[in-house]
Image (cartoon, rainbow, N blue to C red):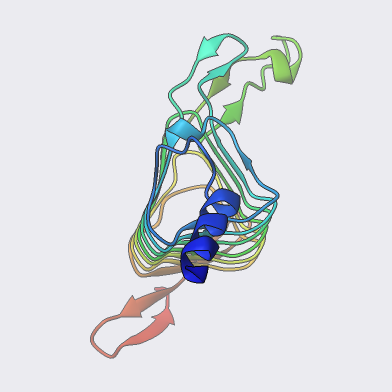
Length: 192
């Protein structure tokens, strides 16, 4: 009986209402901001830390958007994460995002002749797709149009502005390839 009560309290406190799909044993700690929860899907065994923002847009300044955030199974997203989408943003199974990670497929209009930046229409260079078992270090930013292949490692405070294939180790601002995984000798080696 006590275990059942504990699970009920955990569901009430740590599983946001209205979320499209949330798997077993997944939690989103309080305080949190889950906007348009019906556009968020989360697999099983996921953890989202406190102060996280999940923001799939459905409109901006009257312009309809089709934001969706899809999180696979066994994903860890640290506290203070910011995840925003005007299209679809996918996070693969087994990913780990450290604290203060920013991921977005959204860009503001930056035309100096078009008025205030916040009044200009949004645009995107494309969706963000994060493969399986990707590690994203503390304070990283992953920008629109980026695809990271399976098992990528992103170094602390990196700014990822373009895509990288599976088994890449990247770092810097902007991020660049520093190592690749050699599956023959099972070691990370300096990039060519």
